[in-house]
Image (cartoon, rainbow, N blue to C red; front, side, top):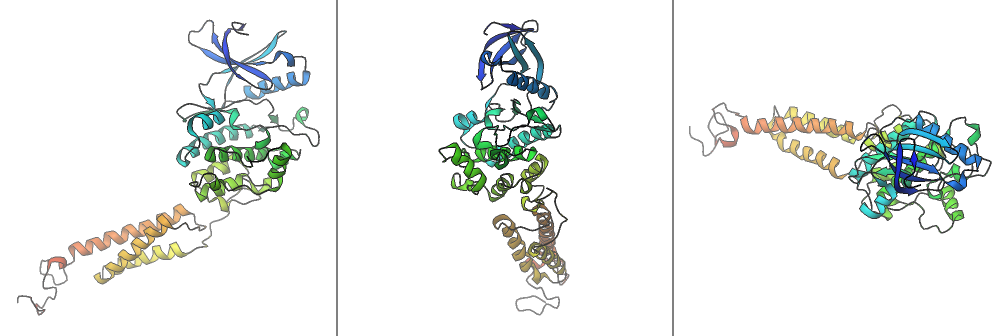
Length: 393
């Protein structure tokens, strides 16, 4: 294939190989510096009409994909010698290779933005009624700076109601470790199966390992996926936060109804826009806000009252400070949950804290109880009658 010309592209070298096809780097013969990736169906598979149909199906699906995080299909060509997908070339490496050879694990602050890009790409596909069915890090390219990703390989993706892609009962399509429980059991799949596979991918990004990595046979992997609880990722990488652990548990729930129902729900949880525990397990919808834990509310209320009382009696100043620091400690070091949401209660509490400090500081700096022109903090005679010991009349 090297040096072969396909339409206006001349093949330069091989850049990857999969089960169905080989991917080559090619250069445009008429437009300088324009390159592409060309996926070629393997020659020994050309006589298999089912695989030819699958290749054409991948072309049709990719032709409808316009998202910035999905590899773009430039052209398609088919002749007596082969079948060719001419695609956008993205300079990057497969995510699993990047984990293994470059970074090991992604810290939380890097993992979340990358995962949001991945979810946005699949959200775009899901909204077009496309179920990928083979999501894994090997099908995700990432640039060396770890700032951009691209999704590739829609070879076994399925359009909703695509009868030609229905599998027989008990059949499994996908890569074992990333299969959802319903995929392992050969059931009909929807986009929530992809969400499970995305959860496994995120688990691997955070730990460097797949769940159930200690399983030694396919049967054992299948059994663990269907029957065993998700291994705590902190046993592999202890610094993962509890918030992300809860997100992983929801994404990897055995029951599809208890997972994130859409990629948008998954993204909202990653961004902290909603508490993962509050998403309705049946619908994925956040219920109305209800105050369950009122402690932060009472702290905020007391701070506000203490600040106002300090205008009348400066003796309340030390108490205001105590509660101000108590609330700060509460939110920095104690993980508490409430149905108003962490951000909302932080806003309320720190607003009250700010008011408390401002009022108390003003009192401390400018209070002049006896109106003699000396601020109380420097006034030896705070009694306006000048009768205190040590005061001059």
